[in-house]
Amino acid sequence: MKKSLKERLAILSDAAKYDASCASSGTTKRHSGTSGGLGSTEGSGICHAYAPDGRCISLLKILMTNFCIYDCAYCINRSSSNVERARFTADEIVWLTTEFYRRNYIEGLFLSSGIIRSADYTMEQMVKVARDLRQVHQFRGYIHLKTIPEASPLLIEEAGLYADRLSINIELPTDKGIANLAPEKRPETIRKSMGELRMKMEDMAEPTLVGKKVRKFVPAGQSTQMIVGADGADDATILTSSARLYSSYELKRVYYSAFSPIPDSSRALPLSKPPLMREHRLYQADWLYRFYGFDVNEITGGLDNGMLDLDLDPKLSWALSHRDRFPVDVNRGDKAMLLRVPGFGTKTVKSILQTRRSMRIGLEHLARMGVSLRKAKPFITADGWTPLRLIDRSDLRQMFAPQPEQLSLFG
Image (cartoon, rainbow, N blue to C red; front, side):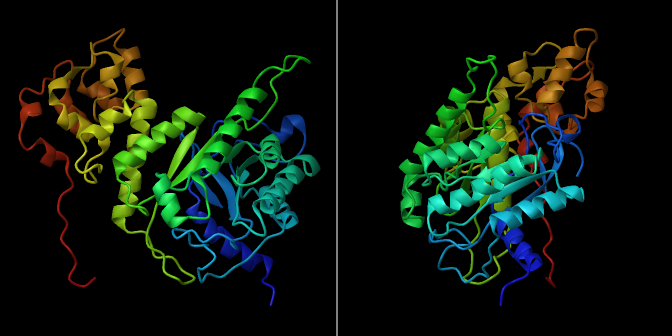
């Protein structure tokens, strides 16, 4: 018996939760109030995601289908998995998106899909969704499409004309991992598609001869998703691979998705704390070399067995391993070292540099900036504050490590 639209929505929205890369940031501003049409890329609006600038955005996040001809060992929707299957037509997704937007539930669409029939057929259907939303319904909201590297470059190029962001999954950190766990996929094909997309974005960013205007093509750039924990790659390997992807393809974001063993049933096992904490630490380390001036080798060089510390964030771990670089004087230290102080974010450092032009900064000023003084005090000097021998304490790490928890006898 054919499933109702509501039943299929429940199945395919739940299946989409394994796609991590869905933050609508970096695109151009559009609003139906000024240009006509439907929707906008900003404002308030069944998925909530946080953009790098802190905005909470809401997206209809679904799969077109969770049927798939591939049998990737790490994927809940692999062909051999005993999960409940469902499928939307392109027209149904267009209808859902526009109706959800009219009810102010969402401000955009995140669309991915299993592979049905062929890569080209699946990609054609996804492109049809984006094209109809833009051209037929004049939809101005955010669209993020997960593209298929095996699909025709012409189809991926057409997708870029309608989507704000495209993402091509790198799948796993190493080629060996892909060969072992997803033998039907080819790492060289994935990289080729990512490279072609980057070149097309660069080409389309050049002013045209008519009017010298830049053509709109994937204005929010491309991103990728990496499964971590499925193939045994350590954190140093993962971060080195990510750094290479950022530089090679000018990615906006690498999204890490923690792997947890999936049973052959309709329900996935819940992710346990260690995989989720590992994922969190990888994101923190990722930000260190993207926004804090760290070289990836600085982060990975001193790791124990190539793994990030699950108890301490990567910046704090680095600071504890380089105590000779501290304390840093907040009133005189340069920007590069201030960014390395535990508890200091990029906005905090910007505020410090601006404030100290006109006054001396003490702990009370840092507190008003939102600094975690407990974390920062051992690593800084400020007006009226010197850590004395705090930085040299043998138990300094224990001051920051989580306290042991008493396990419940009753579960």
